[in-house]
Length: 418
Image (cartoon, rainbow, N blue to C red; front, side, top):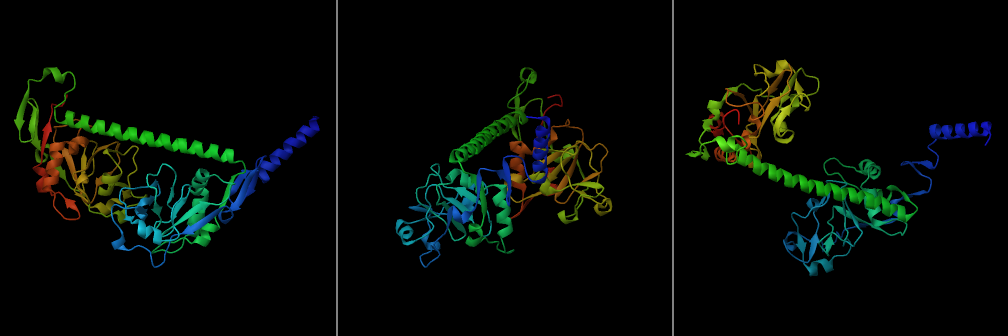
């Protein structure tokens, strides 16, 4: 190839990449795709099937916790696929009286009312042979041999289709998606089904890996929890303390090592002043960091590190005379919607001169000298301490601890070195 031809060819490639798209690709309404991929509306490839909404539609008296056919609810079709924690069944007679909406292998279930856009795939791994959708869902069933079922499910779960679902959903009080809108989804797929299968298998393999890792993490957390209970109560001791202690003694908390103490929260901590602002007062541009009790419950686990964790802010003048946090302080949520969260606490680190306060529905506890840094955040996990929290909490829908009750809660305390 001559130099002029090479130069012209290079200029052509550059111009095509800048003005259009890379060589071997084409620009479409859903983005840049390979030239040999196809573009279609969903209606040309799949059927969209509504559930039966006629006179035979099941009512409360038709449901049971066991039966012939699963009748799906919104709780069963989630953003993470099928969930079968709670199931409604209908009888064989009721199932046979219904028309549309019975699942077959390869169907994709899409929620169309309320929590719009949740997808689940009905394949051989699902343990129920007979399943039906309710009136807030549709079945998407492939009707063309051009597309592979697993690929179709992953495509419908993709960002490209997710954007179309968002645009076509209407209604604020009860969001909805119509069959007409679903039929107009624009989809793209390889013309070669072997490529579709390869793509689907690669993604499903990653999903399987993630699931196995999540299972392993759950197992490791259980091991950690068991180890913590042994260590925080002295039943298991680390070297050299496993060889130097002289025995155990009986206390109000049960048996603990003889060289450990039992103290109350009132003895172990000063109780300092907290702020009382709601979440609506918080933002991004305040000059004071604000530890909200909701974040203690949901965002952090035993520690809040201001050098790396996100913490909302508030204007300093709005928090009144609230005490400023110091590294090593303990912030405890004094209210919880469930028993698991009663007494949840985080130890403060990484302030480095930053101004921060503990907020509404929290206790701010400052150590009187009994604990080393890093230990305080785990106190609420001691089994005997947690039982006291649960016993002392009051309330029906929200469970709360009072300062007076908390001051009397007892803790087992090892020597600082241990």
